[in-house]
Amino acid sequence: MSLRRTLLSLLALSVVVGLLPTSSAMAARNKPPKIRKAVMKDRDGDGKADRVVLRYNERIKHKVDRRRFPFKVAGYRIKKINGARGTRRLVILLRESSSAPLRPASISYKRTRKQPVKDMRNKQARKQFLTRNIIGLVVPTVRHTLTVQKGGDGLGVVTSDPAGIDCGASCEAEYEEGTPVTLTATPDTASGATFGGWTGCASTTDTCTVTMDAAKTVGATFTAAGSRTMAVSHAGDGAGTVTSSPAGIDCGATCAASYAEGTPVTLTATPDTGSKLAAWGGDATCPATSTTCVVPMTDDRTVSVTFELLPLHSLTVTNAGTGTGTVSSGADNKISCAPTCNTTYPEGTVVTLTATPDSGSTFGGWSGDATCGASETCDVTVDAAKNVIATFDLTGGPVTHSLTVTPTGGTVSCVSADEGPVDACDGDYADGDTVTITATATDPLDVMTVWGGNCASGVNAVLNICTLEMNADKVVTVAFEPLGLSLFGQQL
Image (cartoon, rainbow, N blue to C red; front, side):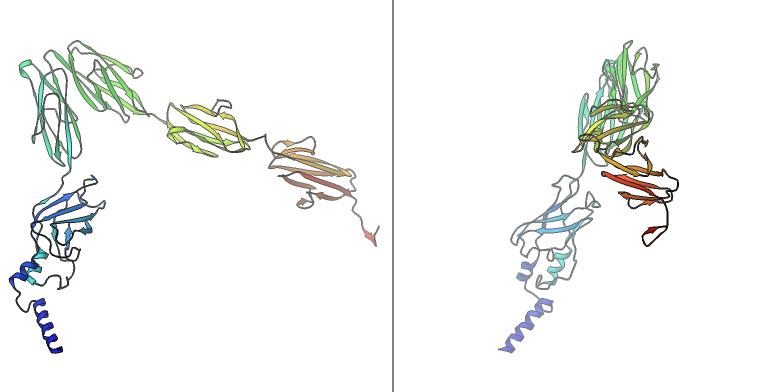
């Protein structure tokens, strides 16, 4: 019995390692099905593939896992393979990363490890399975929209190469990323119209080329017979917009429009936040102090508008008083601090400060460069460096502590760190104040000073000075005695 088993095992092993030929039926059974179609999927819409869907001509006869289906997707890592024995559809889930390409260069089988021979009992079938390339791969492409808008009072059409744009007013088409699109403007010569120029495309001829690396908008201006063209451009390091009345000019960089000859066109310059109108130029001869400028269209006009960045000024906010709280600047969130903070704003910015006392405190008022009294909100115009002080007080008024000094055989004088010299040492002092007490004997022979109470220690004996921090009520005694010798309790 054992010999028979041994012979059968040797025969099976020979078939497995390919020493003996296998039947055609076995080879057919182990031959992988051909791929009919492979499609890339981008379900989250970020332009990168997150899965590959494979469809086979036949049903999969092998167990589905990464060892038996060792795919390689160039630039991606495989997260998981979903499928089932007997299905004709296999899904490869990809692990996305910021460095992954938009389109994989290739997708193929690749042997990544030695497969167990039980997976493939025919060497030829195994070879075919491991080296077969995916065919019919459909990779999703990134596409961008090109929009063409016609301006001016003339007639004309704009066409594109590659095809897609063919319109006289406004139209759009999608092109694959990186595609160069050449636009051609053709004025209606029968009506006497002429081409006035492009916006959104740097060209001075009737053709312009844009590369579709993002969504693009291009304007084409056609001028009717008897019309004049106005072109507006921006200069300077600031930003803003220019509009016109009658309508036609409405742009943030460059734009053009045509008007009937002789029409007075009013241009309005609106600086963005943080910018200012610095100058009108070209055919617009208006002072920079005027945001509007009238240009008569007695000829073709070219206008330049210069916007400059406003200078920056600092705004410093400091909290004061015995209480606590915060000061904020609202929506811009540039001021939000306690007890002090500093930031900058463009010149002329109006900043609304809001004081919010903490629990147990009240807002006492504004000072410095803010003159809003006790109102918790205050508008500050930053036309120069500004320093604002917000005072918060503890509820019920400031905290004070009493000091009582009793001298014997002399006098005392006191100096407060907050208030300076005081008329009498006895009295109330602000919490945290420092009081210096100086003792002076009446009899010059009394050279011995005895301090007591809260001055029992920490005394400068040479200067007869005691220094106290007023963090609580304090009581001090001081006595003056002659310096003498004693023997057995009797003074000598």
